[in-house]
Amino acid sequence: MKKRVLGTSMLEVPVVAAGCMRINALKEQEMDEYIHTCLELGMNFFDHADIYGNGACESLFGRAFEQTEFRREDIILQSKCGIVPGVMYDFSKNHILQAVEEILRRLRTDYLDLLVLHRPDALVEPEEVAEALEFLEGSGKVRHFGVSNHSPMQIELLKKYVKQDLLVNQLQFSAPFSNMVASGLEVNMLTEGAVNRDGSVLDYCRLHDMTIQAWSPFQYGFFEGVYIGSDKYPELNQVLEKLAEQYGTTKTGIAAAWILRHPAKMQLVSGTTNLKRLREIAQAAEIRLTREEWYQIYLSAGHILP
Image (cartoon, rainbow, N blue to C red):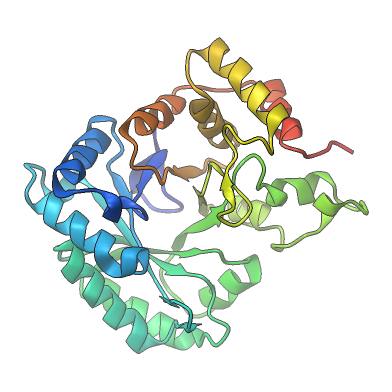
């Protein structure tokens, strides 16, 4: 598995992370096989969040990993906090600190390699966030920090107070869901893709050396479904199939390679518990699409070149 440096840190991570949002559907034995397969593939970065399964995903992972022969230092653990489902977003100092304590307890670890602030809090008081992060770093409970689904100005507001580097911004990104590319290509147009919904977050992250972690890489819309094999995207699937045959992989592998081809040097968050798909996605790390192939996929997903 290829690796890259995360943000401005010295931390080397695999280009594909194991997303753990759905692992609570696995049984204990299946969970053991999942962990072993990920590590066999070099996918030793596990992405969690305290809301995944209402904490059940972290608990299951913590129990399962404790039973393996692997050491804590063999893996990189990331988790996210800040969402109180259906109620509010909460970046208060007390909430962040309490959330981390519960995350560590469920994962059965003394520290997180990375804590990510999940979804922007409209009532954020960045001074409180700074105090929380300072305590977590000073106590050794969290080594690095990042954000998820944040715009450039929201990040700038945090950076005015937070001393630690924010290494990542976790954003939804796939061939159909790629407005942060379209808005740049269709700039100054009256087309739908020209609408700048995120404050040029793609360029911002590149300028500030923040790693974009691409979540839902095989979804279209906001959890509307998987585009691979979907009747909604016949042209895209035809192109993926053709390139899959050419590169000796699958449509899933090509879809992953499309994300990894972007020069922003993104990290793909896989999100699947299917071991066959995990291997297909890991294989994509070795595929480098040509510029023409990348644009071919982009156009077949319904985008335009003005």
